[in-house]
Image 1 (tube, rainbow, N blue to C red):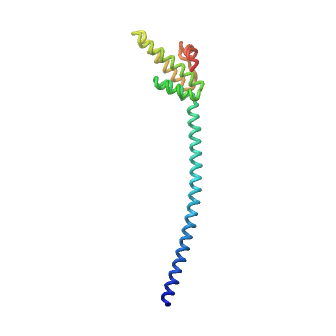
Image 2: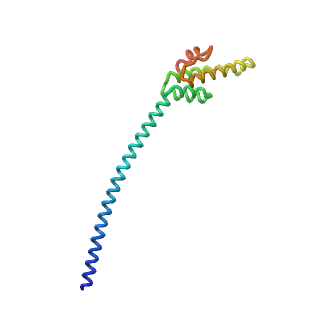
Length: 158
């Protein structure tokens, strides 16, 4: 009987130790959970802050008419992209160069179909395009020689 009692006492001791160990494990798990919650909150706040900074930077880039002006000079597709970008966030510099480039594109297209003289005049338009591109890079409004004021007047709705 005493062996049974010793065995019973041993089992009770082991059961008590197991309960104590389980309580400690639950407490530790609770501590880990609290730490994880805090770290998750910190991470979420940092992510929000970074996203906000990125959005501010993107708005600044898109609102800068200089980028729109430069993109307008890159083929007809670039001009269309610049037009769409400028419609969502109008800038005076972007609109100026969109009008200038539309005029150069139309005049170049017309001159393309006039043999010899038109082709030579298209070379002059390439020089005008380069001058306009340099103005866009510098962020200054530089009218295309001869026709620039007309382009601004004809396409003022853009």
